[in-house]
Image 1 (cartoon, chains in turn purple, green):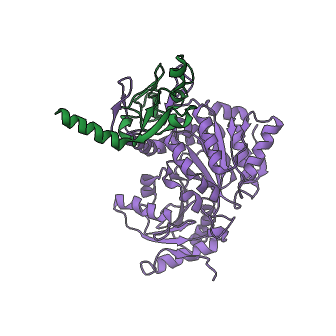
Image 2 (cartoon, each protein chain N blue to C red; image 1 turned 90 degrees about the horizontal axis):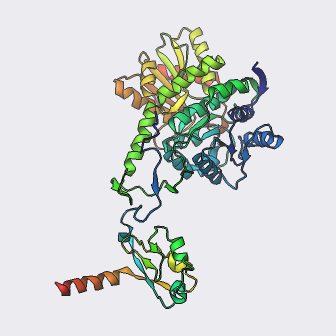
Length: 398
Length: 108
């Protein structure tokens, strides 16, 4: 029988990785995710988990270890946050470019300077173009389930994934989490088979210089060109939505919680006003929507569970009846607006949809944002539609 | 879905001369071997060959004397660095090119 335990997001992520029987773990301590490697070390040292925990001197090295181990066929896991993730940047590109199914738990945290240890999503959003898939969790149960699904998705697609969850808001908050049984996870998750067998009879050179045009190798066999690899990664991510949906459905069949969705929706029936966001803020938005519905508003929440690949078509469908879309971003692309807002606009353009869109930058560096703020911002956006500049900021105390 | 045979997923190459293309075209410096200092030549036996071991493009041929394939030698100078008797020195490629062109013009 699976049992329910009251645990925080970090322990949940570590427990999820353990249930997936990860073989190599390399991570470096950084707030607010340090508890993840600490918990995993405990599992390894006590013999509960048969894995190598490799100590490193930096996040860059942590991911390099994961890349090497994944290349030779190990199931690997890492975790980081904020400046640690930024320090991994070069290797993030490498991991995705080498098509390695690495799973990373990411406790979202704001970036310095100036220092903050608290939550926003600037860290992962800044890495959206590295080729990694990104999912955002609303609560600790989603962290557990997303880690387990991540391996199944990544190992089919040969693409890495970040399982993102709000630092402190989830990483340090305890809540009930149903822990799947080991034998259920074993049945759900087949062993990892690497795409490339590196220990074959002949030595091979992995990821060498690829030229701009195809060419014959020393044996006269035609070798592909660099752009082909880039195009295939894009094509794989374009088709990844279907794999994510399938795995989400299968997960539901085995564990009773279906994730056959790229978006999370709340009270969107007949809604003409949509609050759009990601992560734990979606739960807060649902309280705002309850309050707005009380007042007779037709409001609903759409949360992006999957941000990469970007579910443009699904989002278009979800917003097709909306007259007002209020986008709450815990990130900003400086000089423009919040990333979710820009990408939503781009998705709608394709379908010729033109709802009023207002963007709010919220919760940076752990600034508290509650349902009442979201509700007031939504009312303001609708009442002053087209007359307020965007993005707007909530919670800047000067 | 990723297929095992998809050549655009795992980039790899066999270890062989010419695997990185016509790398001799990159060369800014050319290795010149002083055979009187080269250990296999001096001893007249198969020994040392550190240049062969370290050449990242497999352009050094083991033998007495050793030979470097200038079509693929990119002029990195690793051989000169690792040679224990300093038998290899790196000289500016441009001067050879100018000389070779001049010789070619004379012949025409």
